[in-house]
Image (cartoon, rainbow, N blue to C red; front, side, top):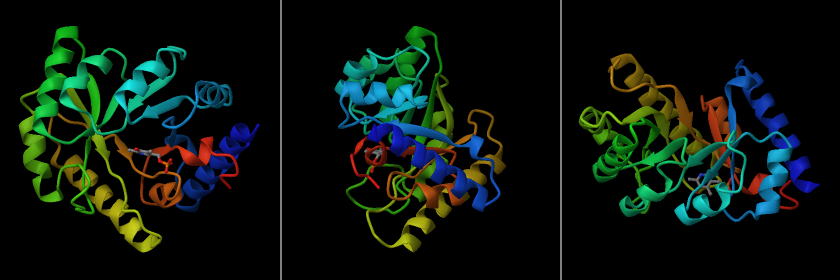
Length: 229
Ligand SMILES: *Cc1c(COP(=O)(O)O)cnc(C)c1O
């Protein structure tokens, strides 16, 4: 029951955040992050309108998502080791965590073997924390240029994780910067990439992310935790 209620409240908050900046709530996809959730909990979320799921670990991705309906959209959102790409390549709908050229090469190689392009987002380390993965802002354009050589990876947008802080201004400026990078890439009109999805915002900050332009929010604890609100 609490999962149903959590989802109802999150959808309401997504709508309110979107409307507050005159956006259409339907533009925004809620990705239910299933790390830490059990299979019955995931199935309950899917029964209550969740259409997108995301995992940060490959073993969990494979184990859990083999048991869910084919129509559910599956996202890989966590750091991806090159040697694990093989396990998910035929199952993943979008990879949010493209953060280095060796990963680009591996995804391209595996996707080519299947003769299928894999949609993906570039993870940007906007806050430049040493512990965080992602491309640094200053390296983004050259990274995008390099990706041109790997046509089976289909870049569709950007992703970031905000710094862990209570300070909403710091979080907001992180999201705003990613949105700027997104618009900048869009304006350059590079024919091998598309700037369509902006994946930012988690349980603590998805409303700020929506106000700053996110159209994919990745929410875990606020869905799967009892007394999340
Ligand atoms: C865990 C995780 C989330 C969800 O975080 P919550 O705080 O549980 O909402 C989102 N994105 C990534 C990359 C994650 O690893």
